[in-house]
Image 1 (tube, chains in turn orange, blue):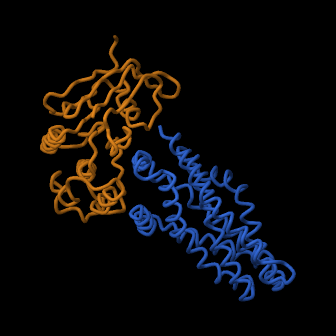
Image 2 (cartoon, rainbow over the protein chains, first blue to last red):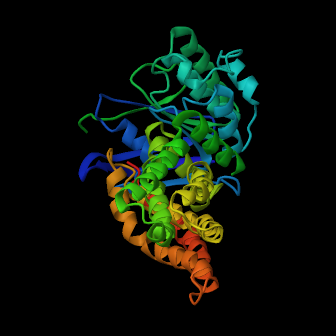
Image 3 (cartoon, each protein chain N blue to C red):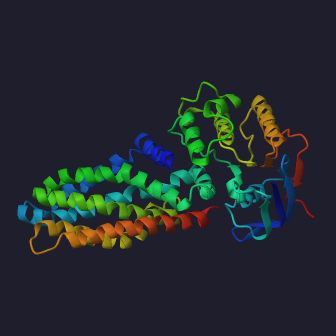
Length: 202
Length: 221
């Protein structure tokens, strides 16, 4: 499986945010997208996921097979919002996404243990702190299997220990043949990750 | 798909009280009519089915703006749109519509017979009106879903949805009311308008979710 972007351009409200972005990502590789605020990191991720139309260029997923015919079907998208309902408990939220997206490598309880939220799954999502909410959203990546993770500021609100644990999770995902595209301005701690700097002249 | 239905029903019960809002609005509309029209029992029973239908129609429109907006605000809508290859988006919308109908509109249908008593309607008329509401209100939800999908990005979209949707619901209202009258007034037929009403619901059950899915897919930003 291979994710290829050629000469990609994106726009917001009719104004070009970036253009001429190109990269190729093989299985087991990670791409860290960095750049100042407003350089189009989030826009790029949403274009890759297919949530925004691209202004120009080419974007394709090679050798996805029958399971993953398109990028949208092969990706987990973790945006600024956590996509969890505050009125439902953490376990109910995760169960829903597992049922909707298809089950993955770990069960709901196991995924919660992995992100360090074991034992509080019965609480309503609205009772959790910002960092705990983010970790619950990360657990969502584990309950369903997708080879490509699109992460938008994934570590926002996480403490040092959780950051390190999440870095371990991302390494494990890459080791198992997954791919990661992460937009961030904090170092994520993924060894051997490619870097794409946006918003610079030339 | 069943899990989406269960989730939306659960949210409806726990978080919104959407069902109660609609029923109380419905009650308020129907309860004020006799005071406005006056104590003419014959007149009340004659306009009863029409008033019940109008009240239910307006109550249906109340909670529609939250149908997709709540999902958009917490980011769930993006993931529902992304899931299109596994769970076709139109089908997802249909399931959300059914959950919304069961959670917010079905209580109106259940309350309608009681409110029919306020209008001095006879038992047969009450039964016929409740039956037409049961068959006809899903059509309103399906049209409403298309309106809600168009207005999903607008922070105060509720009124816009009502304005967009109301003209399209007129055929449903006309056939719903004429079938209700057909059950009691002798020369008027019941079955023909009732079948057209059922056909409208089935037709809009396809058209509404499909157009809503199209609007949602192009409305993400």
